[in-house]
Length: 331
Image 1 (spheres, rainbow, N blue to C red):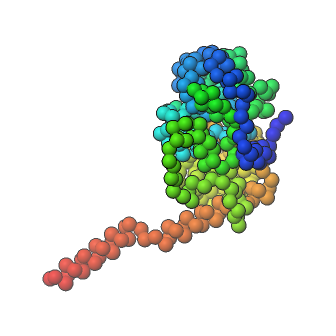
Image 2: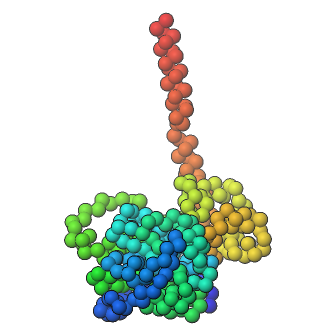
């Protein structure tokens, strides 16, 4: 059954407010529980799942397939935001594992393209292998779906040395999730933490007079910026001036339909960003309108800020002109 992305995100965000669910009894998730089967990473390295990826580590595990046009790309983009927040701790204190649920098609080469699209750094492994081996591993992690569209979108957090395992999701407040991940590390829990408040660190959904802001924060910002540069997808600075609003609304609501209809602009975007296709968001027309209005407002703010700031060239010319006058007076 095909799910709508927005409905899925809403449900997962609601679950995020609850206490994270602990996995099965801790003793069952200790050594001997996980299959030590061979897997292949997106870099083409063959590893043993337990010995090389789990044993002695604190891990964050999610489930993906690269052709997904539903919730996977947004979830993986949210995980990339978590990676940014953790910084160089990823690959040192924490390790990310993205397990494919489509090993028949997700080759190491395809996973490598996918990893690059999300800017995955050291310590984040995109994993495939023989279908029977991957399914055996995923089964132990609780991913037991019978079809790709129904695969589990919760993430698994684990401290293997401490036999501590729990489930969480990526659609709540990312700062809370980062704290939960860090809390898996007993060294971090024992430290005195004085974290300064910063408005930039709040990824929760605050009330806003602009309905589109919450939507943008939750489902657009993981892949797009406004005036900062390309991320997983294109930067959206000036998009409402470059594209017709009717086309934008159609693309926001169902980009797959436009691609199927051979829309030239949709196909051009697919060619420019081949590794990750924009998913079908399941948004209503009014939601798309709210997003477009929000983009217009943000672009207007950027333009107003630039207009009110003197350009470096202007300052230089003014200084040069004043210097010339000084020389004139000296003579």
